[in-house]
Length: 52
Image (cartoon, rainbow, N blue to C red; front, top):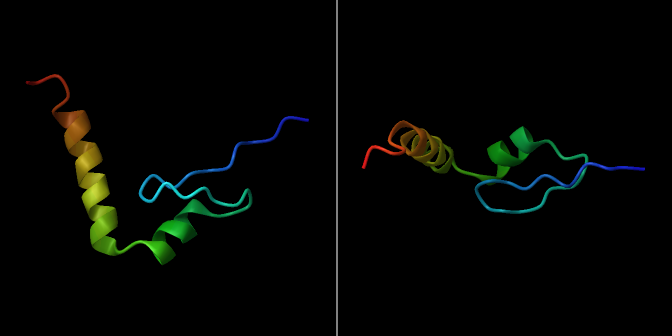
């Protein structure tokens, strides 16, 4: 039987339980500023990729 790999939080790299909710983890374990910073960094990486 094939099973899904455990999800890993992109901020803290913690491996979550198989039945864990990533949204719940992000909201309960990370500060709003940390979440906003990660989103902004991802956006900048995509927006400015290859423009150097």
